[in-house]
Length: 67
Image (tube, rainbow, N blue to C red):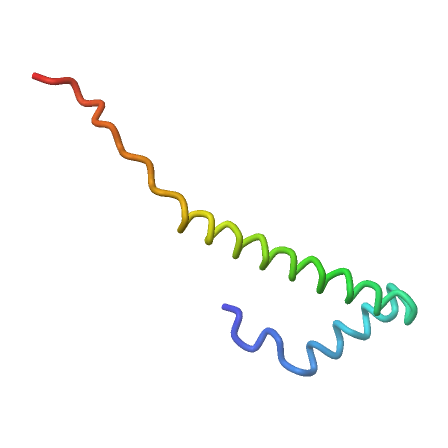
C-alpha cells in the first residue's frame, strides 16, 4: 500500500511546498521543533519501557466463584 511513497522526487515536492507555505526563515525553526518532539517521544517511550521492566507485575487474582 505504501510502496514507493517516499521517493526522492516526492520528498523534493514536499520540501518545496513547505518552503512556500512557511518561508525560508521558519523552516529551520520548524525542523528543530519537530526534531525535539521526536527526541522527547523516544525518551518517553524508553522511560516507560524501563519503568515497566523494573516494576514487578501485579498478581492476578482468581475471581471465579468456588463450587
